[in-house]
Amino acid sequence: QKEVEQNSGPLSVPEGAIASLNCTYSDRGSQSFFWYRQYSGKSPELIMFIYSNGDKEDGRFTAQLNKASQYVSLLIRDSQPSDSATYLCAVKTSYDKVIFGPGTSLSVIP
Amino acid sequence: DTGVSQDPRHKITKRGQNVTFRCDPISEHNRLYWYRQTLGQGPEFLTYFQNEAQLEKSRLLSDRFSAERPKGSFSTLEIQRTEQGDSAMYLCASSFDRDLNEKLFFGSGTQLSVL
Image (tube, rainbow over all chains, first blue to last red; front, side):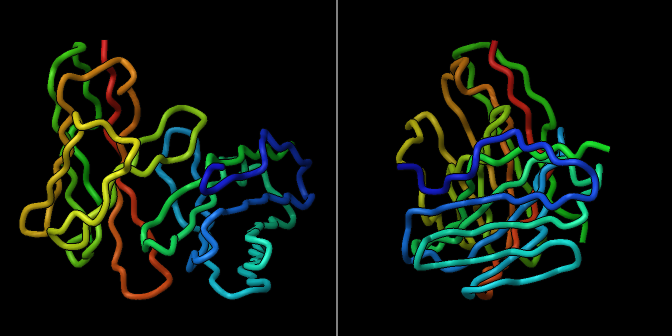
């Protein structure tokens, strides 16, 4: 079992729709959870951080965490073509290091 | 704050040669990570440092890979006797591990091609 898994892509949504990205992790003692966005040919950049169960909203982005299910998600409302990128789920594990999932490629179709 | 710098941006080498990459983190950051990324995959953890101490090296990493961070500032990643499978983007990231929100700042990466 991989330490961080994400829903396989690519994911295509029409402009204005909600994009839903999912992530599961294996280390039950993991401390905090991150969503990074990576545009083609660029390095990852942080867009969301969450460490408590429940929802966290920042503009069009909502991160959801369920530690009992070891599940993290990212919702992007009113998706825009500029949201087209690879979304990486990252976890700060109980060993205090940050590891990444394989990423989900998102395409927003105008 | 000039961000995280990596050098070189690109490296082409022949199989069997040794290569060394350098990373200069954001100056006040105490943590430094090395990741490897291939096309269509997420960053794969290689190793990380807290100040000058190497806290962990991936068990999947061959003994051909070594990293240092002397004096807790810049870091180097060396690959000895390169193989074609080492071809990848090598990413460095730094952070300030003050709490749960350990935000990583990435450099632009070093693209390694082993011929």
